[in-house]
Image (cartoon, rainbow, N blue to C red; front, side, top):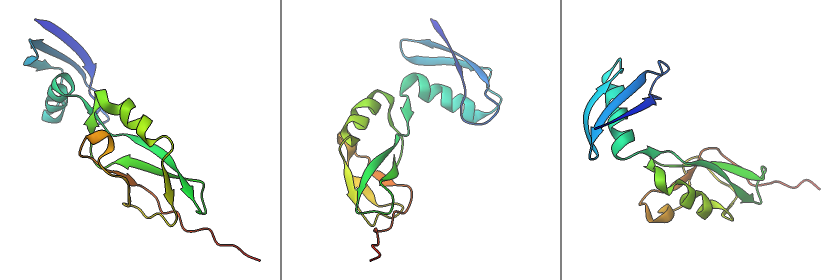
Length: 125
């Protein structure tokens, strides 16, 4: 049996968790002050996931880049692969919040979407 120590990041309490596991199966979670911490510990040990946030270039926009994020969490082990796929991606202005910038990033079934509006650049003569 192994004991895994971690800090819960679900809420500001930052509970110090101790997870007892054997062969990938969770036997006990200690130190959590709520059930969200218990669920976090199970997920973090068995199938850790993260949101990916980044920026991509905007062509013809008032801003040179737009912030983006995955629509939901992706497997932690695929973060770098997904980040590499974002390198060199460019969106054409206008870009609106929620616009899909990359579909099915790294074949995860998860899209990358814009998180801010970037209007088209206007030129004044």
